[in-house]
Image (tube, rainbow, N blue to C red; front, top):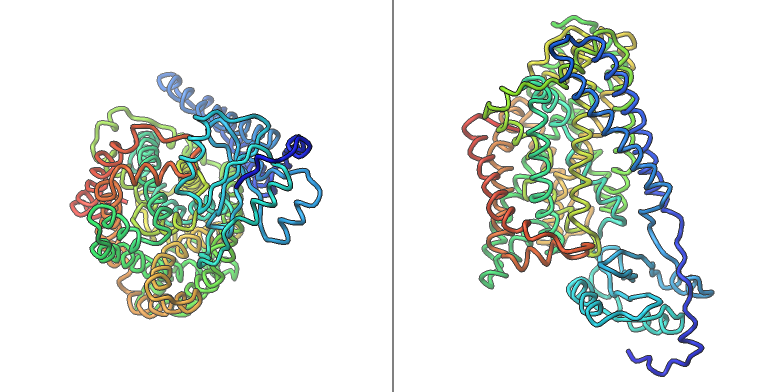
Length: 626
C-alpha cells in the first residue's frame, strides 16, 4: 500500500494512543490472586508461630527456615499481585483516540489489540478469534531497518497479511482495513482470550491426581522431602513438554492426528504415517475420558449425598461408609450418576470452545480455588492440625537419596501437567497465534502446583486432626477415609459439601478436556458439526462407561500406565525429532515477546524425550508412578 503522498497535515495527525484500564478479567484474576496470597500468607504466619513454639531445640533451626519460607513466598506473591492490579501491566487493549474509528471497527466486527514485541508495540486486527489477518505498527518514531526486519520476521508466518505503518492515522488505517482479505476461510472456534486459554488448561490439569494422589505421596515420602524434587520436575516438564504440546497444536491448528501428519510431512513429505500414529493419543484420551466418566458418576453421587445428608448420616461407622462406596463402585452401581456425568460434559462441550469450555472453566476454577482456601482456613483451626503442617514442612536429607522419591515425584509432576499428546495439543490448537506460549505454560504449571498444594494443606492436616494415618490414596482416600474424618469434625456436613463441590468442579474441567480431542478429531476428519460430533463421542463414552463400572480401577491403570505416557512420547518424538528444529523454534517463538533460549530445543529433544520414556518404562515396571 502506498501512502507517500500523504500531506503534512495528515502526517501530523497522529492520534494519541491512550491506555485503557486493565481488563475486567485480569482485574478479577489478580484481585483474586491478591486475596489468595493474603489468606495464604496469614495462614503461613500462624503455622510459623505454632511451629516455632512447638519445635524442639535440635530441630529449631530447620523448622524456622522451612516455616518462614512459605511466609516469604506468600508475601512476595501478594506484593506482585497487587502490583499487577495497580500498575495495569496486563492491560488488554489500546484504543486509538480518533472520532469515528471506533464506530468503523464495531461495524466491521474488528477488534484492536496490542502486544509487546521486542523493542516496539504492534496492533493486530483479527478476522476471527483464532486467526489474525494483519499486523500494523503504530508509533510516533521511525523504525530502524533492523527493527523493520524483526517486525516482519516475527509475523511472517503468523498472519495472512502484514502491512507496516509508521503512523496510526485514521484515513490510512481505514484504507488498510479495506485491504484486509475477506475472512471467507472456514472460521475455527477457539479461545477468546489468553486468560480463558490459561484457565481452561489449568482446569484440565487440576484433577483427581491433585486431590487423591498428591497429598498421599507428600505424606508417604516425607513432606518437603518429596516436594523439592516435585518442584524441580514441574519446572522441567512445564518448560519443555507443556510448551511443546501447546506449540505443536497451534502450529497445526488441529488435534493430534493432523498435528502428527504435519510433522511427518515436514520431514518426509507424507502426512499419512503421522496421521495414523496420531490416532493413538486420541483413542487414549477417549479411553481415559471413559474411565473418568465412571469416577465422575461417583463424585456426583457423593456431592448429592453431602447436600442430602446421606454422608453425615453414616457417621463414623466404617462398615457403612465402606459398604456405600463398594455398592457405588460395583457393576451397574452408579448408572444414573454416570448418565448425569455424561450429560454435564455434553452440554458444556456442545456450546463449543469459547461459549462452552472457556466459560465453564472461568466460572468453576476461581470458585474451586476460593473454596479450597476456605477449607484450608477452617482445617487450620482444628485441634491437632498443626501436626499435619509440621509434617508437610519436614525434610529428611537421607530421603533425597532414595531413587523412588525422585521416580514418584517425576511421575506425579508428569501426569499432573497433563502431557499425553492429546489434551494439551488440542487446546493449543485453539490458541491465537499472537499469544506467548512459554508464558502461558508457566502459568498453567504454577496454578496446577498451587491447586495440588492447597489439596495437601487441606487433606493432610485434616487427617492429622482426625487422628487418621494418610497411607492410602486413590478413590479409597476420597470416598472412605476422608468421609470418615469429615463426619467426625464439627461442621463436618458443611465441610463435606464444600469439599465434594471442589472435587466435582475439578473433575468436570478435566473430563471436558479429555473428551475434546476425540470430538475435534471427528470434526476434522469427517466434517461433522460440533453438536453431532459431541453427541457421537458421548454416546460411545456412556455405553462403555456403564459396562466397565466393576473394572474401572484396572481400566484406568492400563490407560494411565501405558497409553498416556505412550501418547506423550509419540508427541515428543513427532515434534522434536521428526518435525525438526526449524519447525519447533518457529512454532514456539510465534507470538513470543522474545525468542526462546538456545537451551530449549536440545533440552526437549534429549532430556524431555528421555524422561517421557522413563515414565513409560518405570510405570510399567512399578505398576504406575502417577
